[in-house]
Amino acid sequence: MNRLIVLLTLCVMLLPLAACGKKGSPSAPGPSNEVTFPRTYPQPD
Image 1: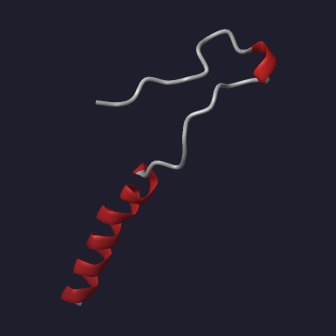
Image 2 (image 1 turned 90 degrees about the horizontal axis):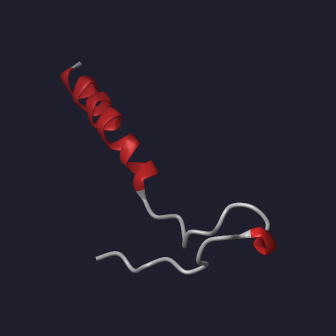
């Protein structure tokens, strides 16, 4: 019973971290011919 509680607690703590990864380079919203801000993003520090 104790192992089950530890396993469930571990899953609850680790599953939200799966959504925090970088998926790819950012892209501007909308059609590319109507983008009004720069198409390149500054590099993170």
